[in-house]
Image 1 (tube, rainbow, N blue to C red):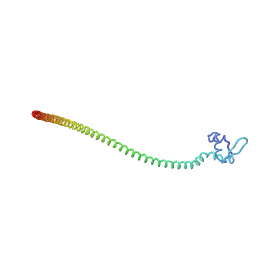
Image 2: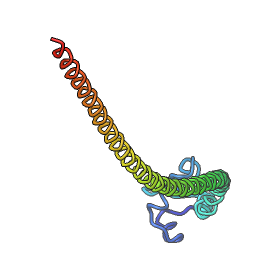
Image 3: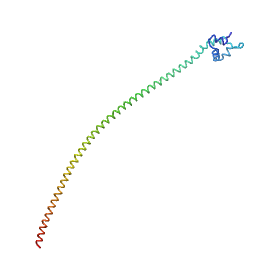
Image 4: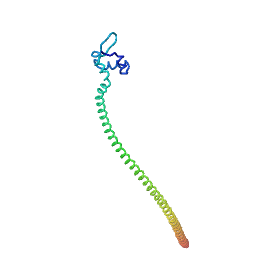
Length: 188
């Protein structure tokens, strides 16, 4: 003799809706294991056993699915681990490149600093040399000025001497002329 849904719900300590869901989830259960008595539905003994073992059966059905899911998860995990290894390697390479770039930048800054100091030293030497050169030019100008003054004075003296000589020559000529004129007038 079979049992009703109410009897099964009391026996399994489940609601009527849960029993109906189990019945509906098993393919062909209603046609094979249920029959109608008066105005309620009864389930035969084999159907009762199936409903009693429903949780076990569901777990067994889900177990291969779980195994497949576990395998799939393991594959995904392996893929992700490989990707992480690749990313770790890329990060290490980038870190190494960054370290090299920073060292190069530090070396460049140091080189620039050294060159600036060298330029400043050269600039100081150039200014010192320029001042020395300017002093030499000033000294040379003074010498040239003195020399030109000397030569100017010398030229002036020479001009004066020439003027004196010319003046003396003119006096001589006048004297000679006067003497000559006197002589000539003397003859007349």
